[in-house]
Length: 122
Image 1: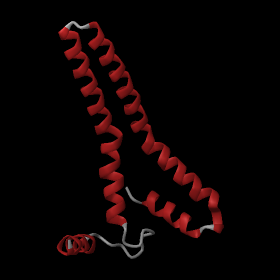
Image 2 (image 1 turned 120 degrees about the vertical axis):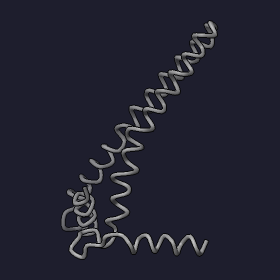
Image 3 (image 1 turned 135 degrees about the vertical axis):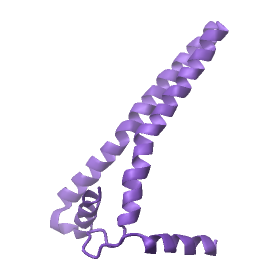
């Protein structure tokens, strides 16, 4: 455990730290979340859900069992709904946090700096 923590510290130390940045050294972490994690959640997982639902439906159609086809159709519809929700959740979270940062104004300078940091990373 101690070795893993030391490796994480080394990775963060090796990251590009811009002293003029609004992120105060968290550029690397935010870049990973924004450019690595969010696209997987927004695009990769919905594609996997739809492909799995289509495979289930294909198996049910090949088996020629009406009950299995109906169950597979309901699974496919549920997975498509989950895929749509996952696709839009990243956009909704970005919108929500931007709105909170803008509404807070001068009463919460931490929220404003977080919003500026998030928006500055490409």
